[in-house]
Length: 321
Image 1 (spheres, rainbow, N blue to C red):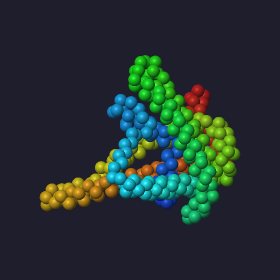
Image 2: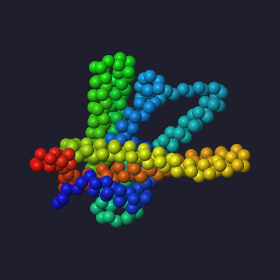
Image 3: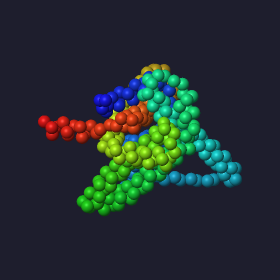
Image 4: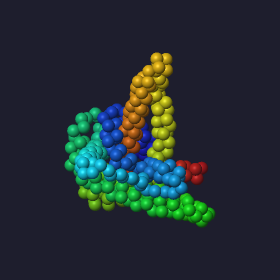
């Protein structure tokens, strides 16, 4: 059988997401667990740079300041607010884990049959393996946190010393962190696929995921880099979309200028922010569903048939001439 190309992978992932709009919602909900693949840690490192360079150092978590005044009623209000926030967090985590598993199950069924289906069957399958899905994501986030913690320590020392040797160590550590994060993310994706699609336990799924990853090491790295590069295109789409999102607001602001009504200017601002947030939510949901579907397609082909590295294929083609 002819080996699938990465172009076919992207096309299949696009088709399943475009033909099944419900996956956009699942993708948006599951994004709260972090984006699967290389892009998640890349985005965290980028955000860390953006937030920390201005302060002259690196920090893994933002500085929180809490000022309690007002006596016992303020304390009770804070406790009640904390309870509500905790309940919301648990609800979001539940929806995110269930949506991630449902997305994997739905995409796999689509790649097998190419038929539309209701969300009931994938949802039940995801709920059945909910705790395994959550455990895999928690372990992944812990490992990524430890990686970023080590990177923060090295980066903070680098910005204090600024010697050539430390510069080299900083660059090497950044590359190692990105590669290690990709390994963890690929193992997480394959483990989730074994859990949801094959019904395996977590430990057995991890062993099978490691074997699959070892057999397709370069393919996993290439796919992770390819999807990471697509994030730059995603940023461009959001930038262009933000311009069009505020076009209705511009018309309202022009009307506000002619009529000298401040309320119109406020309505224009609120409308622009609402349309921008709606557009970002749609794009984020679509892209996360697209990313997970691409990994599921590759998992199914590698799991059943095998898939060779396109880089190795390219060099073989070059040197065979």
